Image (tube, rainbow, N blue to C red; front, side, top):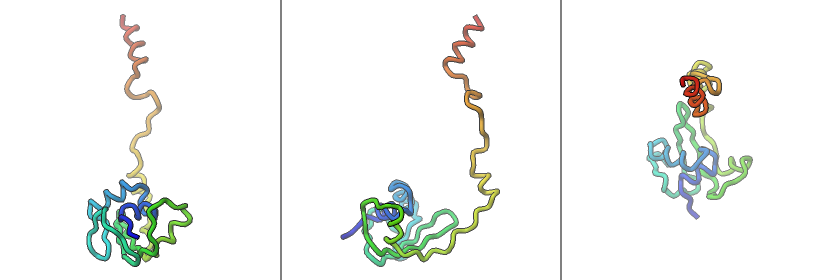
Length: 123
């Protein structure tokens, strides 16, 4: 049995969606056995997968091949994780990643109803 790399990455919950897995492969952030891999590559048992996710590089060894979704608790049995621990999140970095402005609903551009009310007042 063979499984596409992007499908396996999604089933193993390395990426949330298959589209994200495919994009990571096209951006050369995924390596299989040391070589850059495309999304359509077939995996085999004992392949080593290196995934670059921001500052963290995950190193996984394939132990089981599945192409159908599994419960979250069963996903880790598909691989053996040799990754270093993720880097600690900086609180300043977290603030920079959040949306800069929070605005109240309706405080931005006027709605169609608001615009009609304004037009009535101008007449």
